[in-house]
Length: 194
Picture 1 (cartoon, rainbow, N blue to C red):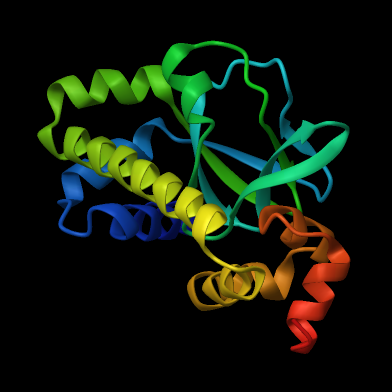
Picture 2 (cartoon, rainbow, N blue to C red):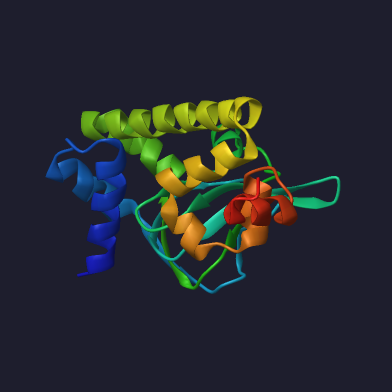
Protein backbone atom coordinates (compact mmCIF):
# COMPACT_ATOMS: atom_id res chain seq x y z
CA UNK A 1 0.00 0.00 0.00
CA UNK A 2 1.33 3.42 -1.00
CA UNK A 3 1.05 5.47 2.22
CA UNK A 4 2.18 8.63 0.46
CA UNK A 5 -0.70 8.20 -2.02
CA UNK A 6 -3.30 8.11 0.76
CA UNK A 7 -1.71 11.05 2.59
CA UNK A 8 -1.55 13.09 -0.63
CA UNK A 9 -5.17 12.41 -1.58
CA UNK A 10 -6.36 13.25 1.94
CA UNK A 11 -4.34 16.48 2.05
CA UNK A 12 -5.48 17.58 -1.43
CA UNK A 13 -9.12 16.66 -0.87
CA UNK A 14 -9.20 18.21 2.61
CA UNK A 15 -7.87 21.48 1.18
CA UNK A 16 -10.82 21.77 -1.23
CA UNK A 17 -13.66 19.50 -0.05
CA UNK A 18 -13.00 18.16 3.46
CA UNK A 19 -16.45 16.54 3.66
CA UNK A 20 -15.74 14.17 0.77
CA UNK A 21 -16.59 10.58 1.71
CA UNK A 22 -14.13 7.67 1.71
CA UNK A 23 -15.57 6.14 -1.46
CA UNK A 24 -14.94 9.33 -3.46
CA UNK A 25 -11.38 9.49 -2.13
CA UNK A 26 -10.85 5.83 -3.05
CA UNK A 27 -12.14 6.46 -6.59
CA UNK A 28 -9.61 9.28 -7.02
CA UNK A 29 -6.78 7.14 -5.60
CA UNK A 30 -7.53 4.42 -8.16
CA UNK A 31 -6.91 6.64 -11.18
CA UNK A 32 -3.81 8.47 -9.93
CA UNK A 33 -0.45 7.77 -11.56
CA UNK A 34 2.67 8.15 -9.41
CA UNK A 35 5.68 9.95 -10.84
CA UNK A 36 8.97 10.61 -9.06
CA UNK A 37 11.07 13.56 -10.23
CA UNK A 38 14.41 15.25 -9.68
CA UNK A 39 15.22 18.86 -8.88
CA UNK A 40 15.42 20.90 -12.08
CA UNK A 41 13.30 18.48 -14.11
CA UNK A 42 10.63 19.97 -16.38
CA UNK A 43 7.38 18.14 -15.71
CA UNK A 44 5.53 20.06 -18.43
CA UNK A 45 7.13 22.00 -21.25
CA UNK A 46 5.89 24.94 -23.27
CA UNK A 47 3.90 23.73 -26.27
CA UNK A 48 2.71 20.50 -24.63
CA UNK A 49 -0.97 19.90 -23.94
CA UNK A 50 -1.69 19.45 -20.25
CA UNK A 51 -3.45 16.12 -19.67
CA UNK A 52 -3.47 16.07 -15.87
CA UNK A 53 -4.14 17.77 -12.62
CA UNK A 54 -1.13 17.29 -10.36
CA UNK A 55 -1.31 16.39 -6.66
CA UNK A 56 2.01 17.03 -4.94
CA UNK A 57 3.02 14.23 -2.60
CA UNK A 58 6.53 15.33 -1.77
CA UNK A 59 8.68 18.24 -2.93
CA UNK A 60 8.04 21.64 -4.45
CA UNK A 61 7.26 22.65 -8.02
CA UNK A 62 6.63 25.93 -9.75
CA UNK A 63 4.67 26.96 -12.82
CA UNK A 64 6.38 29.62 -14.90
CA UNK A 65 6.55 31.24 -18.32
CA UNK A 66 8.84 33.51 -20.30
CA UNK A 67 7.88 37.10 -21.07
CA UNK A 68 10.26 39.41 -22.93
CA UNK A 69 13.06 36.93 -22.27
CA UNK A 70 12.41 36.91 -18.51
CA UNK A 71 11.41 33.91 -16.44
CA UNK A 72 8.19 34.72 -14.50
CA UNK A 73 6.90 32.40 -11.77
CA UNK A 74 3.12 32.01 -11.82
CA UNK A 75 2.53 29.55 -8.95
CA UNK A 76 4.34 27.49 -6.33
CA UNK A 77 2.97 24.13 -5.16
CA UNK A 78 4.19 21.71 -2.49
CA UNK A 79 2.93 18.82 -0.36
CA UNK A 80 -0.86 18.60 -0.40
CA UNK A 81 -1.31 21.20 -3.15
CA UNK A 82 -3.09 20.71 -6.46
CA UNK A 83 -1.47 22.21 -9.55
CA UNK A 84 -2.75 22.46 -13.10
CA UNK A 85 -2.33 24.40 -16.29
CA UNK A 86 -6.04 25.06 -16.36
CA UNK A 87 -6.46 26.65 -19.81
CA UNK A 88 -4.43 23.98 -21.59
CA UNK A 89 -6.14 21.16 -19.73
CA UNK A 90 -9.70 22.43 -20.28
CA UNK A 91 -9.23 23.49 -23.90
CA UNK A 92 -6.77 20.68 -24.75
CA UNK A 93 -4.47 23.22 -26.39
CA UNK A 94 -0.71 23.72 -26.06
CA UNK A 95 0.37 25.57 -22.94
CA UNK A 96 2.74 28.48 -22.50
CA UNK A 97 3.22 27.54 -18.84
CA UNK A 98 5.93 25.15 -17.78
CA UNK A 99 6.21 23.12 -14.61
CA UNK A 100 9.65 22.76 -13.01
CA UNK A 101 10.70 20.73 -9.99
CA UNK A 102 12.41 22.90 -7.37
CA UNK A 103 13.24 19.85 -5.25
CA UNK A 104 13.37 16.07 -5.69
CA UNK A 105 9.94 14.65 -5.04
CA UNK A 106 6.83 12.71 -5.98
CA UNK A 107 3.65 13.81 -7.71
CA UNK A 108 0.44 11.99 -8.53
CA UNK A 109 -1.05 12.70 -11.93
CA UNK A 110 -4.84 12.89 -12.03
CA UNK A 111 -5.67 12.27 -15.71
CA UNK A 112 -8.26 14.80 -16.84
CA UNK A 113 -10.16 12.38 -19.10
CA UNK A 114 -10.46 9.75 -16.35
CA UNK A 115 -11.51 12.45 -13.89
CA UNK A 116 -14.27 13.61 -16.26
CA UNK A 117 -15.58 10.05 -16.54
CA UNK A 118 -15.63 9.79 -12.74
CA UNK A 119 -17.53 13.09 -12.41
CA UNK A 120 -20.34 11.57 -14.48
CA UNK A 121 -20.87 8.65 -12.09
CA UNK A 122 -19.85 10.09 -8.72
CA UNK A 123 -21.47 13.14 -7.17
CA UNK A 124 -18.62 13.27 -4.63
CA UNK A 125 -15.93 13.43 -7.31
CA UNK A 126 -18.00 15.94 -9.30
CA UNK A 127 -18.27 18.19 -6.26
CA UNK A 128 -14.53 17.85 -5.57
CA UNK A 129 -13.77 18.85 -9.17
CA UNK A 130 -16.07 21.87 -8.87
CA UNK A 131 -14.39 22.92 -5.61
CA UNK A 132 -10.96 22.66 -7.25
CA UNK A 133 -12.08 24.91 -10.11
CA UNK A 134 -13.74 27.40 -7.74
CA UNK A 135 -10.59 27.60 -5.62
CA UNK A 136 -8.45 28.13 -8.72
CA UNK A 137 -10.71 30.93 -9.96
CA UNK A 138 -10.75 32.68 -6.57
CA UNK A 139 -6.99 32.26 -6.18
CA UNK A 140 -6.39 33.82 -9.60
CA UNK A 141 -8.58 36.81 -8.70
CA UNK A 142 -6.86 37.30 -5.33
CA UNK A 143 -3.45 37.18 -7.02
CA UNK A 144 -4.50 39.65 -9.73
CA UNK A 145 -5.88 42.02 -7.08
CA UNK A 146 -2.65 41.72 -5.12
CA UNK A 147 -0.60 42.71 -8.17
CA UNK A 148 -2.92 45.63 -8.90
CA UNK A 149 -3.48 47.07 -5.45
CA UNK A 150 -0.77 45.99 -3.00
CA UNK A 151 2.69 47.42 -2.44
CA UNK A 152 5.77 45.24 -2.73
CA UNK A 153 5.91 44.91 1.06
CA UNK A 154 2.22 43.94 1.25
CA UNK A 155 2.65 41.30 -1.47
CA UNK A 156 5.64 39.81 0.38
CA UNK A 157 3.84 39.82 3.75
CA UNK A 158 0.78 38.22 2.14
CA UNK A 159 2.96 35.40 0.74
CA UNK A 160 4.76 35.01 4.06
CA UNK A 161 1.42 34.71 5.88
CA UNK A 162 -0.36 32.40 3.43
CA UNK A 163 2.51 30.28 2.09
CA UNK A 164 5.49 30.35 4.48
CA UNK A 165 6.81 27.17 2.85
CA UNK A 166 7.51 29.14 -0.33
CA UNK A 167 9.60 31.68 1.59
CA UNK A 168 11.54 28.86 3.29
CA UNK A 169 12.11 26.62 0.28
CA UNK A 170 11.98 28.48 -3.05
CA UNK A 171 14.94 30.33 -4.57
CA UNK A 172 14.76 34.10 -4.00
CA UNK A 173 14.89 34.82 -7.74
CA UNK A 174 11.68 32.80 -8.25
CA UNK A 175 9.99 34.44 -5.25
CA UNK A 176 10.90 37.86 -6.64
CA UNK A 177 9.45 37.09 -10.07
CA UNK A 178 6.29 35.66 -8.47
CA UNK A 179 5.85 38.89 -6.51
CA UNK A 180 6.58 40.98 -9.64
CA UNK A 181 9.72 42.57 -8.25
CA UNK A 182 13.42 42.44 -8.90
CA UNK A 183 15.66 40.38 -6.60
CA UNK A 184 17.09 43.70 -5.35
CA UNK A 185 13.64 44.99 -4.40
CA UNK A 186 12.88 41.71 -2.66
CA UNK A 187 16.12 42.04 -0.66
CA UNK A 188 15.12 45.56 0.43
CA UNK A 189 11.63 44.36 1.40
CA UNK A 190 13.06 41.44 3.40
CA UNK A 191 15.53 43.71 5.20
CA UNK A 192 12.78 46.19 6.06
CA UNK A 193 14.35 48.96 3.96
CA UNK A 194 11.25 49.18 1.75
